[in-house]
Image 1 (cartoon, rainbow, N blue to C red):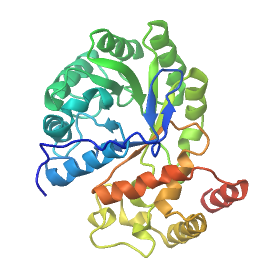
Image 2: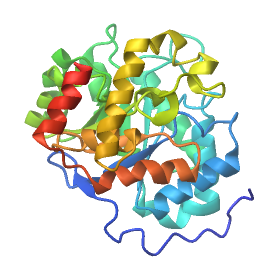
Image 3: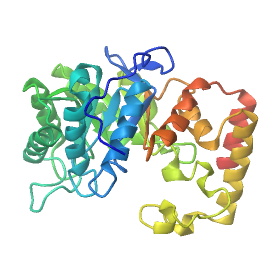
Length: 333
């Protein structure tokens, strides 16, 4: 598949197929589905296929690309590949894109390449901007709570990053609920309100319902759901067992022992509900997240344009009956 230096975005990309949802109390509207670069966009992956997937996303109204400093593998290479894509295709459309990155997890050796210190966050963003060939990002996240760094230091670093013009907005990810009132208040008092919280949330993992979703709503902060398909479990991929070429077969992030006979039975029952809705299991899982307005955007990974198109069909039907919701909960909870 050749590179696409003469890319021209589809003129129908804003024709109403992709809903844009207000992010908390801000002026920003995000696409109901955003494209994540955690997998499939690193140096070990096929760049041309990744590039084609990103172009397909934008052609279909997906304006938000979500990255982090250590996405790859190798670390930093997802950002480097986005930089190549910017030069090949997306530079004329920079103002139509909402590009995010993060720092908080391991990135480089030594005491300053991890967690939430001012030094790490600022140094990491400077490196990220160089890799992505950008002057600024639209959103910069503190990727995780650091129990050993004062919250004031981390929050003030985020405030100063916005004031320096290196990010337009800031966000938090993977912070415990008991830190959020302080963090949201600190940022708001300094006129840099938190735009959005990113957390792991899907039909099978409901931990965000234990205070985080409601706290975000009460503070006017948006919410982005990552791992909406439970790393592939909520797809048709595992309905008949473990395919040899699957992520679970490689036993990296998704372990074989997770797919118990009981879970397999649950997945097939969920698939039956999806079929009755004229959806695939993955479409229903994504639609479920968008059903009630608590989730601003669902963050999907895609290894090909075809997979991406399948997933974004979820936005066509986000209405659930009370009976459907009860049946889904009775299977999972």
